[in-house]
Image 1 (tube, rainbow, N blue to C red):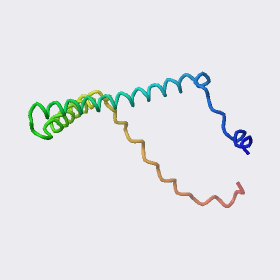
Image 2: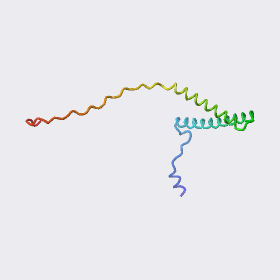
Image 3: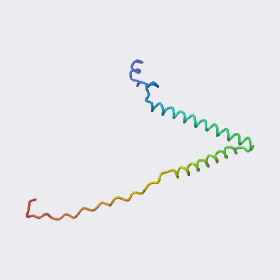
Image 4: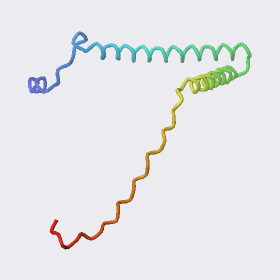
Amino acid sequence: MDEEEEAMAPPQMQARQMPPFMRAAALTMTGDLILVFGLLFILLGAAMFITDFLRIKGSGEIIVGLGLCAIAIALLAFSSRQLPKIQVVARPPAPQPPAKMTKADQSSYR
């Protein structure tokens, strides 16, 4: 029974057999995930430090949140200026209605 399951299981790729772009993508995603967690802990630490410094409960989180919102607004404003201008293309001409058909001359068979 175990031999059948092993035979039906898809072969697993070794790290050396993976194409280079997949290896690079996996490393990039891992690095991004670790970076997000690192930034999260930095922001939580900054928020706790501000709360301890001001001795007002929740003040650190509010200040860090407002700072993040300000940075996001500044980034969005800056990135909208960087977008290339899209040229408006003239509309294509409207389709013409077909010409009215006339009766064929009955004297000719063509």
